[in-house]
Amino acid sequence: QVQLVESGGGLVQAGGSLTLSCAASGPTFSSYAMGWFRQAPGKEREFVVAIPWSGGSTLYADSVKGRFTISRDNANNAVYLQMNSLKPEDTAVYYCAAEGSPGEWDYWGQGTQVTVSS
Image (cartoon, rainbow, N blue to C red; front, side, top):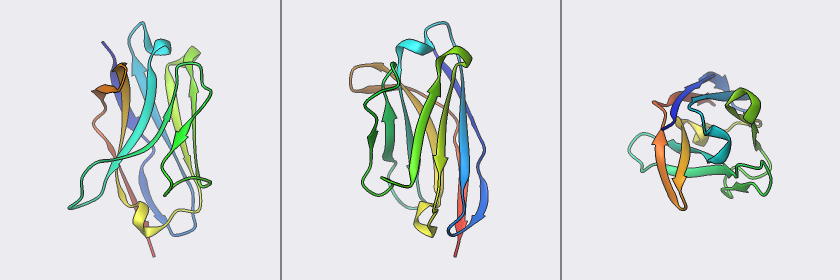
């Protein structure tokens, strides 16, 4: 079982940067692939980025490629999302998730709001 808590959201101007953090609790955090998802008002939740347990071979949505960077610190049970060159269309609630079984995002945080003003 993994519990996830996001932080670091806020209001930023277009072109600015934010770093989101996801603190995980549970003895097996380092064995999970981790991901970030987002949900904008009136839209479905969408995949943003994922990172395997080893920290290599990250996968990004085309919409954030080159602007967002995911990283993880297994020693401290944390995952980060560095977001640069933010755009108004990046405005959403951002969720941290853990892949409990292959292809299944079983564990979710409560989300953190990111608002990008134009």
